[in-house]
Amino acid sequence: MRIDRPPPRPRAVTRFSHLLPTVAECCRRLAVWWRTRPSATRDLEFAVVLAVLSFAAPLDSVGAQFGDLPVRQAGAPSVLLTLGQILPLALRTRAPAGCLALVGLCFTAHQACAYPPNFGSLGLYAALYSVGAYQDRWRLLLPVPAFAAYVVFALVLWRLGSPAGFVDYAVYFLALAVFWGVGAFVRGRRADEAERRRLAAQAATAEERARLARELHDVVTHHVTAMVVQADAAQFLSASPDSSDRLTEGLTAISGTGRRALAELRYLLGVLEATGESAPSERVPAHGRLSDLVEQTRLAGQPVEFVEDGARAPMDIGTELAVYRVVQESLTNAVKYAAGRPTLVRVHYGHHHMDVAITTEGPCGGATGVAPRPVGGHVPGGGHVAGGRGLGGLRERVDMLGGRFTAESRPDGGFAVGARIPTGGAV
Image (cartoon, rainbow, N blue to C red; front, top):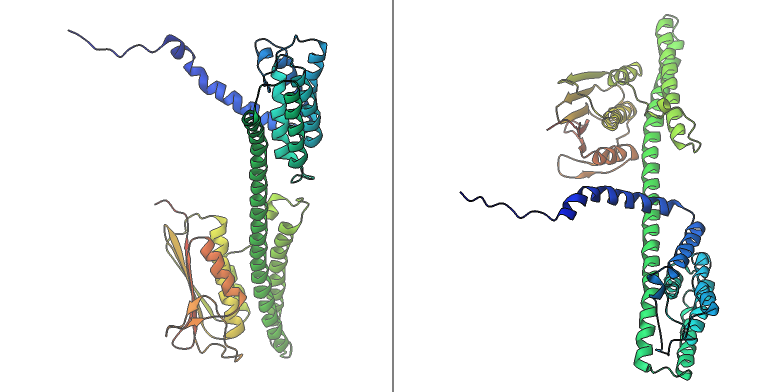
């Protein structure tokens, strides 16, 4: 019976294939380490390595040769000119124009003396790349003297009897210009990346400012409104001699509201401070339970009914804060614009999302005579309801979490706010 077997893999490949991931990881770490070193140190190390390679076999005879002049015997001047094409590279990022001038002068002398080509002549290409990538001052004017220097270089070779013609020197010039152009291209890419990062930082800063503005609005508006209403009620109770217990409850409610406002403002100040010395626990967004929020609103004199449906599932802090702010802003508007009107807060906990609905019976503004100014909802007849910062901030907050937010007037003159917010539950 004949069994066909696959041809054996080359023994060398089989032996060293398991080392390829290790080699790749070492190269990656080496590249990261190299990028973290100071630029001056990297330039110096680059120049030293290139100098060593220029005199090491078999690279000592690899290099650029222009003009095709008869080769002369190398000597001490050849060594000095070779080092003159390499050592200035230690300044290639700090003084690229000066580096190119020194390297170009030594390169011209080396070629004019017709010394044998060596690896050090490649320093001219590195200098051209460095000018394109790192030169800042007179960057647009520098090609003019560089071109003039190349014309002088070509005339010198021609006067020394070089057999190369005009086309040859044009090709040489284009080859040198390519390295300059590559450096300029890298410089442009680096500038574009820096601009992209700057714009991204600006966008992140603007987004954080908007978030803090929403938080500040929610904290100040809700707590100050509750404290004003509670203080007004305390004034009426203080005039009655039989209401000392209720007056004490009212003053306690004002004190508790003030403490909660201070706690949330302290969190916002901790976010804004630049020293970063706040404890990690103080960095958690300050918000309480919905039942405490409802009870606080009741103490302000607003009749509120609170209903929860479903089993509460774990959710991230962003979702919890969004739900809390939706209820908080809605109750604040109810106290401000529909004082004394019954308000229903219904929260339904689902597996993938939670629904929040706050309805206030109409007519809105019954005690104050002021109509609310909601944002982001639609009047049942089809008109869009436009208005204040609070509900607009809620819409942005819910949209950022991938939810839906509505705010609309009711046919009976009341107002309804609703939100469906994903909880991040497993599908």
